[in-house]
Image (cartoon, rainbow, N blue to C red; front, side, top):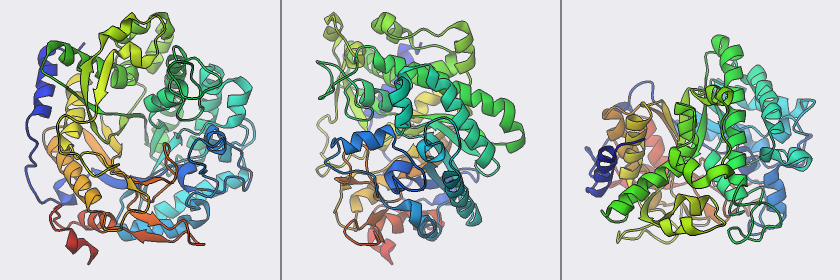
Length: 501
């Protein structure tokens, strides 16, 4: 349990004005082992949804049900066919690493059983192309895309059966790709996945229950997020322990899991809001990281959720504890927290009610342009400081960080340049202050099919013209800026005009 004095310290670093130590910096200000890259995921970029033996995932089903503005990832950016062209863009940009995900239903079409030779060939070719160009492959095993066959058969992540099937799938990947892939992430945004998919129902597999969810026909928002999270932790631990015991010694790689992390700041200095802020951190971060570090859920979660949150057996606790070499963090924004313990009086509660907080996105700040995130690098500093102080400073990869804009915004994305400059500068400050951060990946390399709004928004360094027959890619100002940074040029957010030259 974190002390109140530590929490007050963490509050302090968010309430003072954030000033970068330096206005200009470059890639070589970071340690030599630190890696910079960008990323996408399988369903968001590959397309070829019905080609070469691939079968639907729960994300295909969700998109085809019309929940994403009528958009689907059937074609996406057509990365399945255009990967060599995209890797050439990575080379020109200067990426040192690329984060991608493997489509389980492309590699093992029915979730279990025979491996699809076409899927195996594609990922071998893709990985080899990255290696050939000196780009580190960082692979994620599940990015919101469980095979629909397993969802239909036994309810996917709600069943313990998934632990075995996921472990077998993971071993197929370790065995076939682990001689070249040295960085494995089991799940992307495990906390967001279960909240979006099983509590409020706004993401696959679209399960929820009244009064908490949105237009769901099945599910239980009170219990299913906790059950799915528990099974994901067990599946992660099973695959990670298999990797450590059977493959890591000869492949010399690393394995971890990814969570989405807001930084939380008390809305006021009132004791209730300060305590609520720690509760928000426990529910959002501690839900997954506490079991990995300490072997159990935070006490406040067990108290507020009661019997709805599964208990770890002694054996499970031992398996989960320490089952990681790194933690992947996706971070975009800071939220302000107000106490809402009145929600605990409700008889029927979901995760949000159990957390007993209200979150607010601004606190009298100057608002960003519509649809964009405020630029608050102190939030990333706070996240990294919290991991350092409370979890023993484990290796951290910032696996997603980037600015949202409307899909057809100008290629002169100065807002994204300012955002990246601010957060990379904050990251540099954190590293210099002892954070064990090991890498940083922008989201996203291309304008991909986004989880929450399909093709309505973009995060890419490269614009993809969806109206052109060959889905032509165009570099944005942010691509030029990031390239100059990666190639060692001193950069700032104040001289954007130079980066298109």
